[in-house]
Image (cartoon, rainbow, N blue to C red; front, top):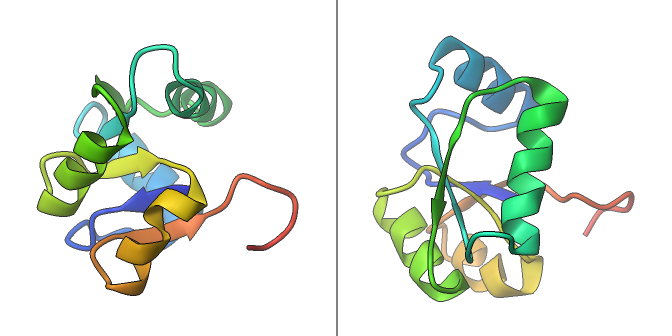
Length: 103
């Protein structure tokens, strides 16, 4: 799934793409490490949409989520079960899931 820090003025994937294209290199996306499935998901998103967002690798999903919630990074591709408690608390805002069915 794709989530943003609530302070970021983005509420949908089309808004994310438009914002990233209007502000190239200004959005950072966290992943659980270089070459992780979450990193690859972000790189695939970049290729498919033509946006310039900056990858920030972490040593695991926990530290990446902490920085997403604090605003150090603005965006994250993550697994839904990991992010769900923080979504319910309003600490991160989900934009979409990367599956064919709604979660």
